[in-house]
Image (cartoon, rainbow, N blue to C red; front, side, top):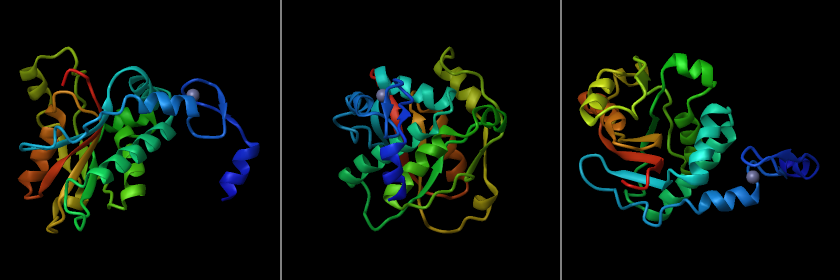
Length: 219
Ligand SMILES: [Zn+2]
């Protein structure tokens, strides 16, 4: 309430276009971002590790994710997380009585120091605000810094990611039957999330799927 009252007086610049706005992202950019939304976000919800994606990694959404990661614009991540949650809730792909544990894909500590935060954790926070699912940001830990993936072949990617995660302390004696949903900013080949799921499943934890904000159009 107070924030709403203040926002009438306190106008700030939109992090994506510099227009003054009293919202986190201006109306114009919100509209452009929403035009990247997938019509069938549930179309990859199948197989061993089902995937639910909000939008196409292109245009405005690609720029927004870059601004989130490299310009420290964390509010963008929260909004994307909220939108991901609203779309997720519209599709009811899992039993509504289940409230899965949300684990964001971690980045290496040294990267997080430079960036100031883990973008997937910010997205997961926005997601959990809406869904009220429990969040465990330390469920997985990145123990190895991986090389940039885009120039690697599929086999190289798999090799590169192997052994780069470990289970967080809070999950090492995890015996609850609560299943897990992983959250990531971009889903490309799936090697990262598959490795994350493997570590959790080795511990007997059920991983029901992956939620991602974006994926390249060709997928
Ligand atoms: Zn804008």
